[in-house]
Image (cartoon, rainbow over all chains, first blue to last red; front, side):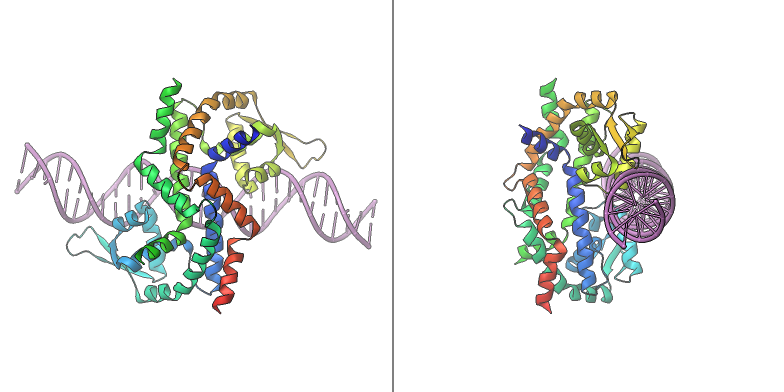
Length: 162
Length: 162
DNA sequence: CAAATATATGTAGTTAACTACATATATTGC
DNA sequence: GCAATATATGTAGTTAACTACATATATTTG
């Protein structure tokens, strides 16, 4: 019975636990890059990696790809532009659009980062490959939420209560 | 092979994905409380629930219990004090300590919240009880990290690389 | 084809955690 | 029993995401 109370507390505090976990992983990620002498912040990864794969994208499509609100992407792009890792140009067809791409410096950085990724991937796999695989769990939860939101699911139970 | 690239990207972007998930869950949590007409923020949960269980605690022990840095706890306590959900008094034995406890209003709120918790727990269970259970995965990852940090694990692979 | 609507980008301000530093009190050890 | 160290609390400033609003350009529709 006591276990149920603890479980309930864990379920209810799930967002704070996810946040803390994310924070810890990011901090160690930063230290790993530092240990390799690479000036790179983990938060840059989604933007740079997407540009690495897709070569050139507009701000909004990039935001959608990485799952961020566009102002977050803009502020990351500002940092990356200051670091001369990316550059942008106007889309000649649709002049509202700003097309973003890696600079040579950016491409070079990403290729020097590959051995670091290997390390991060192995270490991450080590901590997430437990009985219930965290990565798979996240994928599954994201898919489940996509079908029907947390709120919508809660509403079903709310109706039963009244 | 392409799948491996995607997996790698997911592993590398794990902290941002965890953060986003935490954010989504928190927002819907707030809406659920609102739907029940309860003026309550999900971020208050760990503090209030701990005080509910343990009745009275100092600021630091409370912070440790919920896993927050103490300044975060202090700022939550300020809000909760403003809402008159908690009160604090000096510890007569160790006068450095500030002992925090629920007010009558706080206790009343927590008991009116029990039906809402039921709903949240059910909805959370629904989204997390996939093949790889997210809650269990988080518990396992936390335990694994506790044994040996992400950084320490990465260091093992870093040595092999050089 | 002009008005209404939609889309793309950008800015300002918010949020909820954090670290670093400061101060007061308690505990320990010479 | 006093000096050094440790612990408890508090303040200030940072971070990395967000929402809401503003503006410019493109697309759709009557």
